[in-house]
Image (cartoon, rainbow, N blue to C red; front, side, top):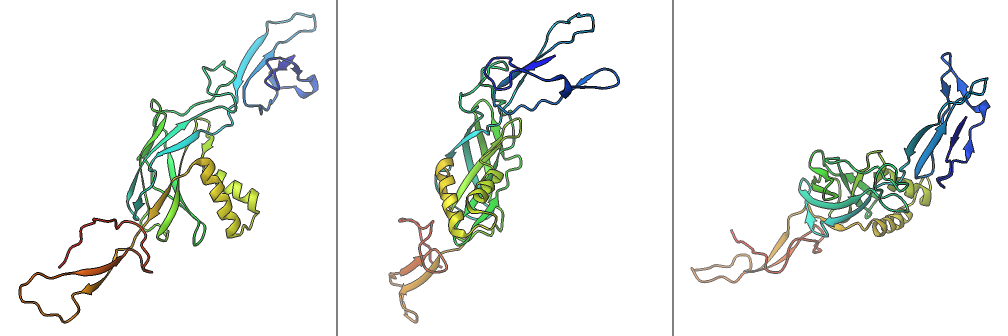
Length: 274
């Protein structure tokens, strides 16, 4: 007979009927049991021969962890970056079971499998306007999990070119637990978009979903700026002649192609004249 705790209530209450258990040529029992509840499952089994001799009970315990790690980006909180530039990243990442919290060992019903030291973390940018676009950042060997600190630490590099127009984007950071449950994953993001917006989503629906995800995941906004400032000299006027005296210079400076101020020119930034 094979009995097991099928619903994680600490009671071995489910018997597998004999017709659902098969044997091979060596009389080995074969039965596939599907664990779905996120907890520690226990299976007990024993055999009885035709004379009624019963062997001792065998026990196995198996834990199920379907919950991805919870991630909170600590750094950066803002800032402006260009294509090819490194973004320093620190993100708290803990593998919590849902809803009872972290485990205290294999035989704790609340067990979560955990995240191993040195596990590769990943990062990507999410752009909404003028169109929805996702750009994965380069993190191979540069953004790794520190198990003692429970953090993804390191940096991610923006591809050059990234294809993202100048403006503000969301930064997402993720890591998988040791079973492959992916926290803040692209797969999860795209699944939510498809569920909410259908197979051919319109931009307005995608924008609403991304805003909701950004709030739930607490994603920071960073700026992308790949254009040099545009300078228009006002004084002195063209053709002016000078004889060694001090020259007063005035110029309008904007930091984008369309003339709007976007990012990196702040009050007190030094100017130079050639």
